[in-house]
Structures are given as structure tokens and as C-alpha cells.
Amino acid sequence: MQPVLSIRGLSKSYKGGLQALKTVDLDIQKGEIFALLGPNGAGKTTLINAVCGIVTPTTGVITAAGYDTRKEYRAARSLIGLVPQEMHIDIFETVWAVTTYSRGLFGLPANNAHIEKTLKDLSLWDKKDEKLQALSGGMKRRVLIAKALAHEPEILFLDEPTAGVDVELRRDMWNLVRKLRDKGVTVILTTHYIEEAEEMADRVGVIAKGELILVEEKKTLMKKLGKKQVNFELAEPLGALPEGLSGWDLQLADQGRRLEYTFDTTADRTGVASLISRMSELGVQFKDLETKSSSLEDIFVSLVHTPKSETAKELQR
Ligand SMILES: Nc1ncnc2c1ncn2[C@@H]1O[C@H](COP(=O)(O)OP(=O)(O)OP(=O)(O)O)[C@@H](O)[C@H]1O
Ligand SMILES: [Mg+2]
Image (cartoon, rainbow, N blue to C red; front, side, top):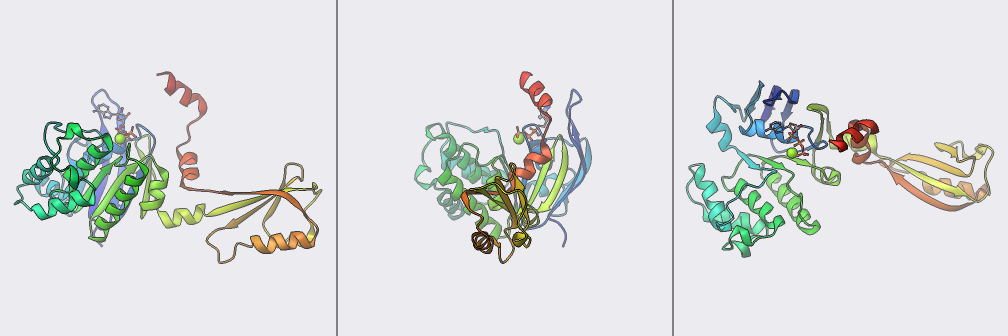
């Protein structure tokens, strides 16, 4: 299938020479939720802004639904909705005015039913006549989403949509994004909340220092990461693994005081219950046990890990 968004050889050097994006190639399929993860300054916003025409790419070609985002700017832009990371809003306008105006900007006829539904979906309906200055930060962010949806875009970019949004509303927002996806809208979001990517995304991209260093189906990623460990703190240290426990992937640690069992959470049977009963048969007793699971966070940290000395330098800047 033809991707709804195609990015080829995209690079961006800002004035002053900073290369914010090296060569980025990425295809996004219609109806997918793609989460872009990366540390501060990695180039996420630059990438999104290049697609949306806010940043002029240094090299590369981007097409949205087949339209070149530079040569066929208007057609491409009308298909795209953007919720920017930075808020630029007119605080003296009302929620209703801002949202309907945004639709008008795209030359579309008024559609009050659509605006009403969008505001209701974002729990903003009771605020529709409030001026933006009277709203909280999280509410203003939701107004930005309503604005971005006013012209019924096919591709929606959400740059840190849930920064500063409380837990309950974050869930509402996730549900809204899923509803949009079910209607065929493609969603590309950036986030610093790894659980957000875990919860929402079909695919995950990790960007670091202007390079897309990983693009993977979330399911595949989670499978790779879907290892869990149970650690048994033993009542009596063991000198070696008993023969009778050779059927499990076990390791002795902490001078025989801890027995570590690693298993695949996606397997039909984890083997934990049978291991415990076998241990009891063999008289291997434990005083305590803890479980550990790997997550997207682990892979993210290992991928973008910078040596401590560099981090220290950055902090001093
Ligand atoms: N207008 C600009 N002029 C010069 N440099 C810029 C400009 N915008 C961004 N940069 C630089 O480009 C790099 C990438 O910035 P970008 O905003 O894309 O990062 P990001 O991944 O979105 O980070 P964050 O998680 O903090 O939002 C940074 O080093 C930043 O300082
Ligand atoms: Mg950013």
C-alpha cells in the first residue's frame, strides 16, 4: 500500500550550522499511530515542522497523500493537522471562535456539528464561550487539539500532546486518538512518556541526535522486550543449581543467595508455578521474591544512553 506520508532523505541544518536532522527516511501507513520518542533536542519537533511546512528542509522530499509538501503546499497542508509543542494562541478569543476560525482558514464551509463534536470529545464543550486566558494549561492544550481537528485532517501530528495534562485527561486523549485512528486518521505523536507510546502506538520510532535509530512495530519490540524475571531470595544459599531445576532458565546470583528465573511473558506458560512447586519438592526455600519486567523504557534508555561525562557537560551548559 502507498504510504500516506513518505519522507525521503530529509535533513535540516539550522542557520548557525546546527544539524538538527541527518538523513531521515520514513514511511507512515494510513491509519497507523506512530510514536516518535527521543530525548530533548533529538530533532522530533524539527521533523514534524519540516513535514508541516514550518521548517524548510535543507534536503529531502516529503509527500503527504501523494502531494509534495513543498511544491503542492496547499493540498498537502489541508490534509494535515498539527498540534504544536509551543502554544501560540490568542488568549482573548473564545474556545469556539478559535476553533471555528481555524476551520475557516482552510477555506472550508462552517460545520458547527463537527466543531461541537470535537469540543465534546475533548471535554471542552462547557468551556466553549470562555476566553482562552481563563483556561488552565491542560485545557489550552486541548483547545490546540480541537483547533488542529477543525478542518478534519487525514494526518494528525501531535507534538507532546499530553505534556502538562493530568492523568485522567491523558486517558481521554488516548481514547480520542484511538477513535480518530478508527476513522482512518493517521496519527504521529511525540512523547516523553514511554508508557504513552506503549499504550497507544502501532509503531515506534526512536530518534537521537537527528538520526532515526530505530523504527519497529511496537508488538515486535515488546516481544523482544517481553522478558520478565522472578528473583527468589533464598533462605539458605546454594553452592550450585540443583539438577532437578535444569528445566528452567535459572541463574544463581549474589553468592548463591538469589535464584533468578527469566521467562517470556508472551509464552502460553511462564513456568513460574511449576518452578515454585519443584523448588518446594527439592526443599529449596525462599524468604522473598520480586519480579522485574523490561519495557520500552529499558530499550529507550539503552539506545539513547549518553556517557555520564557528556550528560554532565550538557548540564553545565
Ligand atoms: N529555530 C531553530 N534555530 C536553531 N536551532 C534550532 C531551532 N529549532 C531547533 N533547533 C535545534 O535543533 C535541535 C533539535 O531540536 P528539536 O526542537 O527538533 O528537538 P526535539 O526532539 O523536539 O526536543 P524536545 O524533546 O525538547 O522538544 C536542537 O539542538 C535545537 O536546539
Ligand atoms: Mg520538541
